[in-house]
Image (tube, rainbow, N blue to C red):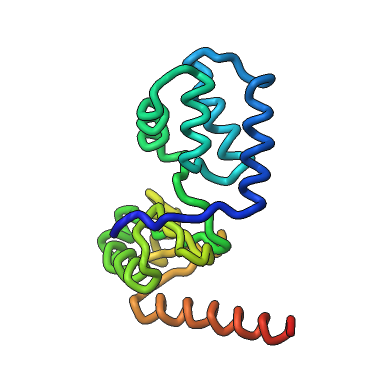
Length: 175
């Protein structure tokens, strides 16, 4: 799947502006400050937009590609904004053997995104985890810290249908 471009929200623009004003006084211009700066940026903004990575590169006097290489090397960094709901598919041994890859493919097809991506409406983000520790419930998907075991492609559809129905109900109540 291709990368889904995301427009920055006004709230994100404000957070970015505040962070960029903050780095001059909070960090040294040493290359060794790169990871702490990236961590602080992600903590404040929620992810690392390209504008922020380029500004950090400029601040440190290093090529933007060096910043991007570090961000893509370490799993802790996000290039996409977090969704309102986070979906994590367990890929531990029991889940993998029990159909974890099939479940991941079901989520990918249904959401129209790949792992480490966010839906265009920012409702869901999708990723994998090494192990949830619920092997007896394999295959497992964790949604917003709620463990869902014995997941099947049909359950993926049912879970998403429940979210859609809840969202419609909330929209009707707010009218």
